Amino acid sequence: MTGAELRAVELRRPGWGRKGYRTEEVDEFLTRAAEALDALGAGRRPGLSPEDVHDVVFRKPPFGRGRGYDEDQVDDLLDRVEAALRGGRPAGGIELNGRPLDG
Image (cartoon, rainbow, N blue to C red; front, top):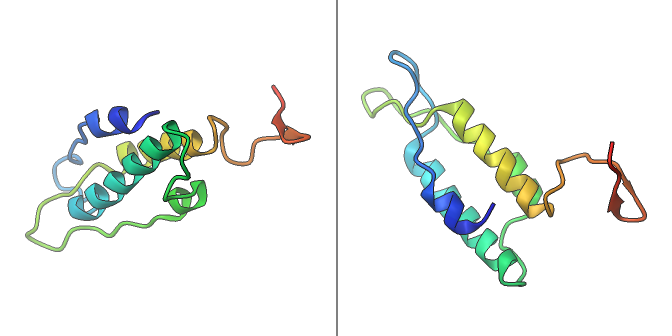
């Protein structure tokens, strides 16, 4: 995944009567993630680590302030960003001498 691909994603709202993640928190974090992916693609050190992406927590929007973004879609997207920052390897992958093993 590249920064441009991340910026092109359109996040959906959760189903009626459900609340997702606060849009402003998600948008801010995904902007930082896109910048990190841009840096990685340019051979520079990204400003976020895979652990930063894995550990991020978003709040629900306050009452009367919308439904936010669909949690499952955001979580799936964050998994892809985390894997990209790991060099395409999923978290907890098995390695031998620093190289991923096909499993």
